[in-house]
Length: 104
Image 1: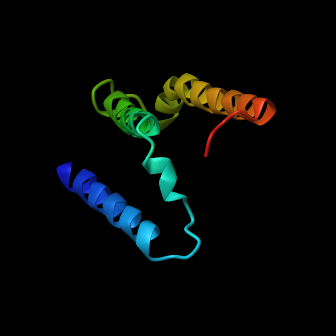
Image 2 (image 1 turned 90 degrees about the vertical axis):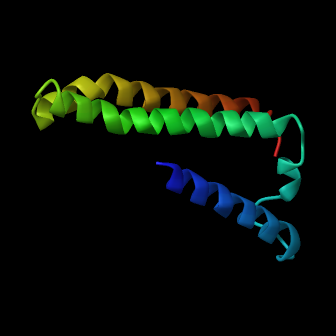
């Protein structure tokens, strides 16, 4: 479990220094990582997504192994979670598209 997190962290550090020193036009501006206000927000997003994706993996496994649901029943039980994630993502994208107040 710690190996993927460690490799991801090392990959991010490598990506940061590569984007800062090597390309003439980086694909992601490095200045967004140098703002003291945005770094905790990015870390929060990463942690929330790690928790969310692990729940999307382990909850169906729980239903299949412990509750002994079949594949269809597990999918039906997981539908509200998947639907709420998709709906909230759509709504937030529409709001950001209309307001156009975000910093890059």
